[in-house]
Image: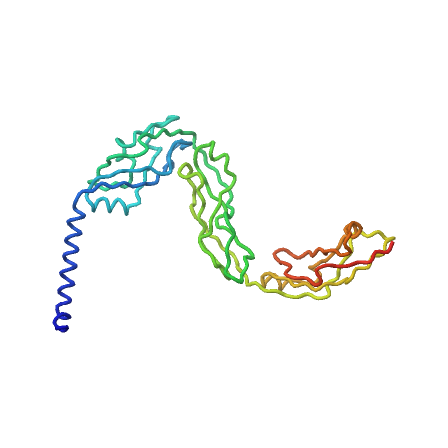
Length: 308
């Protein structure tokens, strides 16, 4: 019995797949109504004007057509494209969206009917187009792998060109980029996306840059008998620090710690702080090279004897 069932299984599976394909073909050949939110975009390469205000980030489009056509539209990443090179040069552009939808929705598969577009009317303010180049900066901290630290990085290119309405472009001094990778280690190279805060009003080129640099492994070292300096004491005053040397634990990148020398580290207290102190103990100030961190010090406070 089981052998007979197993022998028939391929035929049953084929019949089931054929029935499913037939049902899908019939279902997708019927007409449907669907609503989509599609983004707006502005083409201004050949234009002398740019959009200042009035264009939403997206419009809502209601379509009617066969299931296959609607599916194709869904997968096409359609946009409401405003090509300013094709528009009359004026200060305000009025667009009745539903009657003119086929002019602006790109791509729009043949056989689809646009039933409605919201907002029903667009009142778009135009202005003279200007272009300028601005530097890039990171929008967030670069995230290295656990146990690593970013020791240097660079953006290539380090600037972008923005085009748009003069009143908008003039307010922009820099653009931000967002790294697309985390857990970086060693010599790295990844992509960073330019944040277009004024989308869709501005054109930004390029839209992504290369973020490269070095993520070095973290380590720590211990320095002993680091002398404590006294700053600002008059010659007539005798001050004894107890103790006058510290033990420091310093953390940072391996490459930075390899370059560390004892004379790169200074510890000091101020005579004025001693005079103003009422507790008999002071916290010394530890000065380290850039990117290195003080993890621990012993002792944490110093005592002193002040002879007047």
